Image (cartoon, rainbow, N blue to C red; front, side, top):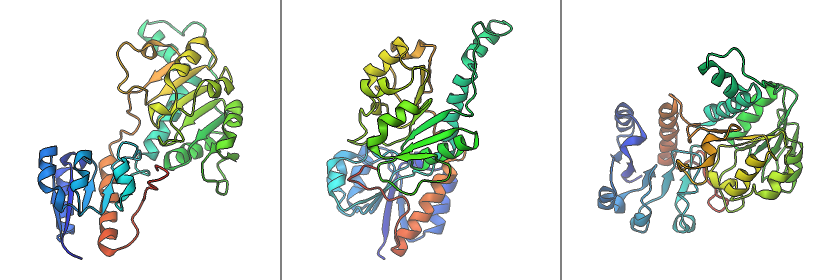
Length: 318
């Protein structure tokens, strides 16, 4: 194979990891542009882009063959030009499964054990909060919408906690042992009606944008909670706010919001039945190691002409 040029932001990896890549892949020219101007200088020679893609320069990337996204969501990357091109797109959909699934479980347990009330009582030096009515997750039903790496990890953990798990996936497959019932998109309202907790773990695509609106929230139990770790626009903002204010659902755990960042004057910040975790669910100390390992394996596959890991279906959007 001819010489390969790989461009990536300096923020993608640590300095020692870049040094390891350069040592391991001596046939690759690694460049680390930190601005659009620097990208513009080298974009015509780049074969592989890692992470940030300057959209206005995509048309000049005449040698580009592969884009490695550093996260799971590719909605911002998949412009019409990228979709129409022959460029392969891969993502890091397995990278954040552990921490994000634990993040959702944490929000579920905060609501179940009413930790917001308990912690408020602690700050007030009060022994036990008033109107304290916790409940248990065991025996309750969790609906997981989107069974990729994150949704599947959450479903497995909820199953081991004794929860009943209903999963929704666009492409039907055999039902995994940790899922009690599996439905397609046509089963959305049935999943919502029976779930005590609903976790939005799907990517943002034309099919999922705004998929949870007034009718869907109206299908949920008044005692049910909804969680969003996908993209804010999967849940329609105005119907969600109304449902939370009117009590037609019990609460929401929102790691992502619409808009994002959430404006300081948003009512969601101060609602007692809402957790806003500011898009932190994917944060973990091992992220850079996982990204380094995934990138190294994919680079070797690229050199060897083998299929890459985590190839995105550009038409489907994930």
